[in-house]
Amino acid sequence: MHRLGLSTRVESRSVIVAIEGELDIATTNDLQEHVRSAIDDHGPWLILDMSGLDFMDSSGLNVIINAYRTVRERDGALALAALNERVTKVVRLVGLHRQVPVHQTVATAVAAMEALEKRQAG
Image (cartoon, rainbow, N blue to C red; front, side):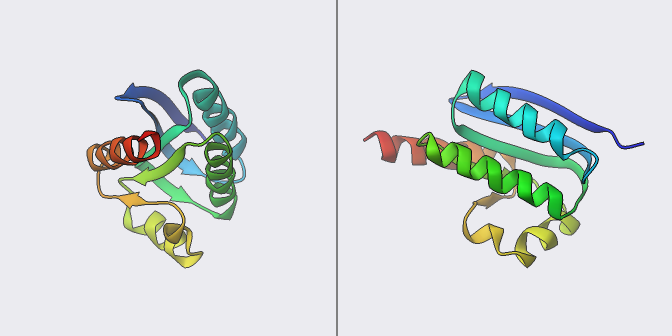
């Protein structure tokens, strides 16, 4: 049975969605809906906290790419934080790290997002 743990919190003006478990074809719809709601409720400055993510396949990448498009359409940004080695390999394999910033920790992602938001607003 596939279970995906999802939670949302707001820090500064960033919306942080924490993902736990396995992100695959069985769980991608859960993440897609959760991300859409988080953006609608809190704005387009999205950080995906992947510290609890054990596994991600290509269907998970598609959800991230869709989230990226959504926040860009709303003049926001997306960052990924705290990826394990396995998930990092998947992200790098398809070159996603060239479009979406990848940070070691959620804290560094929040700081980078604040700086980016200030530059865009300024």
